[in-house]
Picture 1 (tube, rainbow, N blue to C red):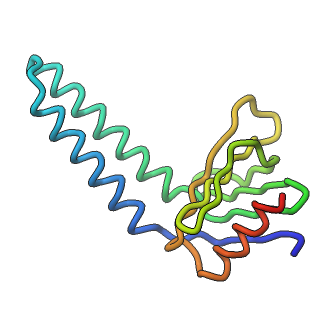
Picture 2 (picture 1 turned 45 degrees about the vertical axis):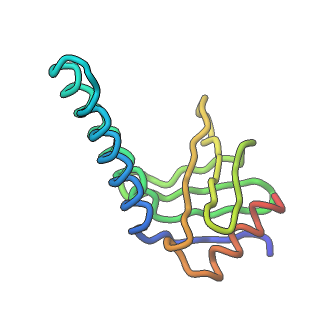
Length: 133
């Protein structure tokens, strides 16, 4: 197996986790003994970060990973970008974090892949290639 190409679907489990986490954080902020304006500002900040996380979860359309460490990421709102795998990725049966650095970029990027985003066979192949690379 030289490489793997995964077409990602929208993750309902990931979206539910992000939504529940944001709502729980807003509830905690609402109960803090701070000024009302500060609580409203913090709640708005949490809501904005939750919305951005949901957008980023649905942004990536395809992930191509080669054994030599070459990565190509296709997203819905931007042209495909190529780069290399970076240290710090994570592979588990319930989550894959593809850590990569685009060509010419200063900072690494991370793509989260949950099991409900692809078929079980594609998820297994992605895990195998990332462990081997």
